[in-house]
Image (tube, rainbow, N blue to C red):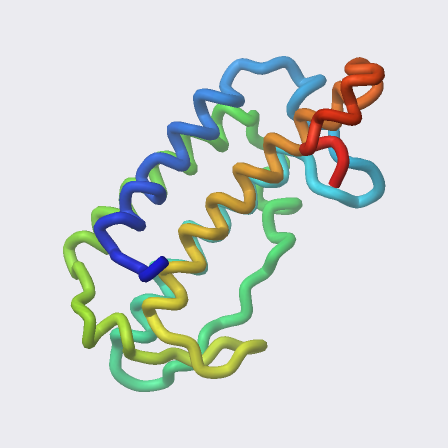
Length: 173
């Protein structure tokens, strides 16, 4: 599927509402469980979304569209462990929604055209990347973590479903 900014915006603007509707006011037993080991729980995922809103998508877009050095600052994939620790999940969900709205307002104020979408920045691991690739990744990143949230939640009932586990694809990955 070809990247179309108008269609991508439809996903990006819905993500905070989707995760908020799924998670707000749930008991801690849903929020702080993970898939075992050092995997992330739901609280961690929402903190990660927030860190991305602050330091990844729009800041990197500005680097690509700006003058001068095109190198991205490395992204700290684990910053949420220090940045979110003193907040509730509901506070994080509200912060995520606010930051996403601000970022989408900024993106809409620019509305990159086809020429702008082909401009490049320098990713610390991938090298040269286009704005089109960055914005496409933002959409897929959202969907990846929605999938992760659903999977972490489903795994909490892995034993409880008994023999139906065989038909529950989310439990058999």
